[in-house]
Length: 246
Image (cartoon, rainbow, N blue to C red):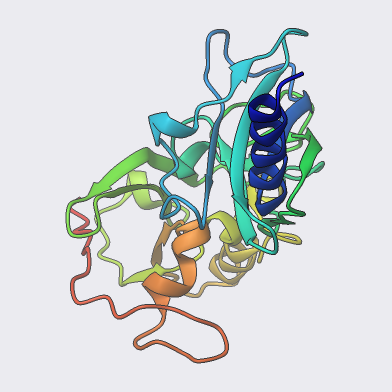
C-alpha cells in the first residue's frame, strides 16, 4: 500500500466525518400507494419543495425506497415525505397530520429507517371518514398562482341548499382538513358540519362554509401577517381569493 493511497484513504475518511452521509430508507409504506408512484423527500434543505425531482427516493438493492443525503456534522434538518405534492403528504397511523420529522447529521455514515403510515389525498379503505353528507371536496388541486402551490378546497352546503332558492352568507375557514373529517384532521376534526346541521335542524339559518387546507410546512408562512422570532414565518405579500359562484 503506497503512501499516496494511504493519504487518499485518510482524506476520504476525514471528508466523511466532516460531511456525514445518511441513508434514509423507507422500510414500510401504505399498501394502497398507487402503483408506480414516486416517493419524494421535502424539507428545510430544499425549500420544502414537495415535488423536487432531485429528492426522489430510488429502490435500493433490497427494493426499498432510499435516498442519501450529506451534510456537515451538527446540521439539523426537518423533513417529510410526499407523493409529489402537499396534497399527498404523509399522514399518521390514523390518517392525522404529523409533525415534521427531524434529523441531525452525526458526521459519519448513518441509516434512518422510515415507516410511512398513510398518505393524504389517496383513499385508504381502512380509515373511517366522518364528513356529513352535505360536505364535498370541490378539488384536491386548486392552484394558487400567487404562491405557486396547490390546495384542497372543501365546501359545506346548508341542508336544503339544492332544493331551494335561498341566499346564504359564506364563511371562509383556514385549516380545511381539520373542519369536517377525522380522517384528514390533526388530533380530531372540529365538527363544523355536525354543529351547523344541528343548528339548521333547530330552525337557524346557517352559512355556506368554504374550507381551505393549510399548507403543511408552509402553514406558518401563509397564515401569519409578519415574521415571528419564536415561531418563524415570512411576509406574504399576495394572497389567493376563492370566489364562490353558485
